[in-house]
Length: 92
Image (cartoon, rainbow, N blue to C red; front, side):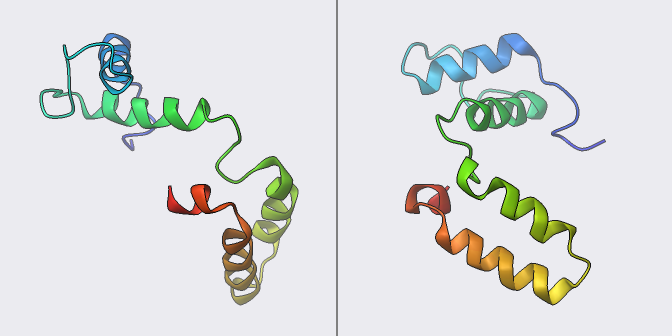
């Protein structure tokens, strides 16, 4: 199983979120021993973004490109789509 498939301890995820929101220093990445909680924090962050990482605007295009069986076509068009994303999304 991958680290993103196994849920982390929800208490740890909440404590890590509180740390990054500046609300607590009870648990940090340096002191957390549950890798699944760290992965859970990343998943939570991505879920709570106001606009999805791949944006609503390009969602259908991303799906269509991924369904194409030609590898070169997919890679070329994925690069184009990623380059068309807002800078803040590309930086993430």
